Length: 184
Length: 410
Image (cartoon, rainbow over all chains, first blue to last red; front, side, top):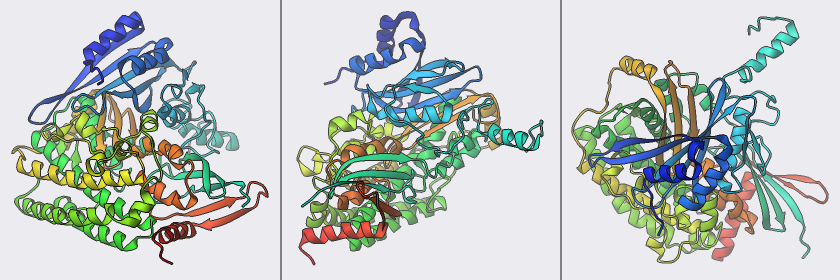
């Protein structure tokens, strides 16, 4: 039987272990149905140094992690990466979604792979590389996953800056016609 | 007999996959030694499009991610946006959402049963299950106006109510399926040739399913009782207790995660969906069906909202999760959609190990990626480098021949 900890207890466990490296922790609640069941999600922002270690301790000491997906978000100056994990699945009304967030500055876009802990994260990590240009260190397979092989390098569909794929066509027009304003 | 290894790439263009896939098999004789999966040939960049539209417009984009789960994706999406903008959903809308979701599950599982029958060369069963499926399609059309892409969901509720005539139609449908399911169960689960083609084929162990984060019937068939409806009861599932279906309920044996177990789970889930439909229709609360009916007001509210949210639901194929972020501007800031097949595709790799080429269609179908048509297959002889194109029809023929051989029919 798996020991079930409440979201508060999980936060407490992580704060005790990592102290100030846990930048923020929040529980979001949503009430469902006439019976008013409360679904509670955990949102944790952590320092990038402890990311992998934290995932490992969640996996080993809380519950066998289910990786739902990894979402990268372009916030301008930096890119936030959210790991959506689930714990206590298979136990009625007990599942908890743990969203672990790290912030990466755009001049240092690197995270370590977690596929050695949970191999199911492979596709999500390949997506991080292809769609957002985040280098995943130690990933066992080379991409691209969804994008074609001939997709322009150094341009990414989900970026909101000059590396967005929208700027790729403009560059070609500027180069071929000498048109500096880049109108298409 | 001399054996040699050769590679066998399948794909990439398979219009029937929800995510186009190329499978490159390494064979030794007829046995599969390894497989590599590559996806992305018809990636449409729907998330990219969604991030350039407002959340209400994006509901309709989300609906078009998949033709079969055309309620699941928008449901996960609207839940993500509701979480981000802290919008409550009226009770009646929560029940109607579940209602459409369960009708969709019935149609998806019936469609899948037909596809599996076809892959095995059991075409009379294909026609039978698809005929039975028409009733639920009619019900969906009656309630929503469409057979697919129901356009039922809105942020903060649903767009159409269930009328008194609708109740009658639904009751009829439930009675019809109750009668039909006994026959279907007997034809699929007790049939000797189905048993021969699926038992012990494409095994996914519990350990692999856990490690690869498998979802839905694929994980449940391996004995992991995970079901978002049970574990994380969203919408009206909070009032209706749903129990994750594992194959041992029917077989009374330890689940092994083969194609037969996956079939059992899906067939039993159709019956479970009927129970849920009855519970929903009997307890449907009165009241409004949407929090804010005026779309302009809703848009203004969404434009002002700042926040992020995750929407998780159980689609017919498993957990479907969407992430949405609003940043106080007109358009969505970020949207990420993850379909269940995205999580389940990796399970093909252990499932294909040591299987036969003739079982490729059955195993591919077992995780329900909807193979209706095999496009083309290329055999590459590793030693000579020679290549020969085998059509999807030929691969299908090999599968049918295996069924006949097993049944002793010439």
